[in-house]
Amino acid sequence: MNLTSNPYLQLMRLERPVGTLLLLWPTLGALWMASEGLPDIALILVFASGTAIMRAAGCVINDIADRKFDGRVERTLQRPLATGVVTTKSAMILLFLLLLAASALLVFFNPLTRWLALGGLGIATLYPFMKRWTYLPQVVLGAAFSWGLLMAFAAVQNSLPAVAWLAFVASLLWIVAYDTLYAMVDREDDLRIGIKSTAILFGAADRLMVGVLQIAALVTFLLVGEQLEYQTFYLVGVASAACLFVYQQILIRSREPAKCFSAFANNVWVGFALFAGIVAEVHLAPVLATLLEAV
Figure (cartoon, rainbow, N blue to C red):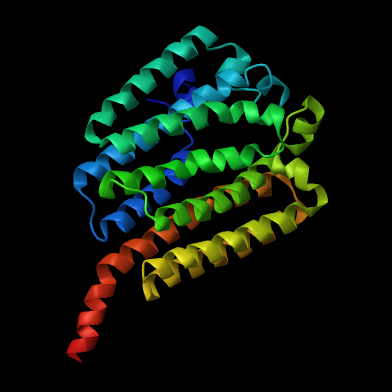
């Protein structure tokens, strides 16, 4: 099936996996953190499926809310609802089916995780409208995209320890940084049609503020590692993320929309680096410690 030609698949952004991966890596990382080792395979499958479904649902919600704006923005003017290829009614039916599929996954969760899932849906629904009301919609998106971390801890431990909230904050700071890069792509169009964003709020200080957010995220990720007593492998993951942030800053130095988008997409590798560092820490660090003791 050609993902680039089917309008319903386009509506769910299935031809663009960047958003799904940006959701997936932190959520899986939180599963490994909470489990202190290999999570239950069923939980991995449920969270991976839920991430894909809810990312698709979030895209549909966003496009329904923005259907009167997308046709006036160069990057989004060919979206199915903007062109009329898909009707609003059809999009609503698709959204219902996606949410029905997501709700079926709730049977695998404990009550705390189910309540968190409902809260996450509320935040995801609120996000598109924040672009009309505040210059900080990226903060709301950061909360929505980081919600899976809290759900992962709740699903494994049936509680939300302090380190879960610290990981949530670290993720939120990182997401506000990379979604600001995304907003920099559309800034001129958004100014023209009255859409708000952190890219507009920061103005000429956009690169500086993205850098500040990236540094704050790195520091908070280090605090997460300290709380969990992570060492070498996790630190390598955080250091790799720092190097990728430097590369992103180089990309956006001219503020060209295409390069800002490339910097945004590069965050998939940031997420992977952090995830790989967590997995290596919980699986390889004990083995390395045993070997060193044997020597």
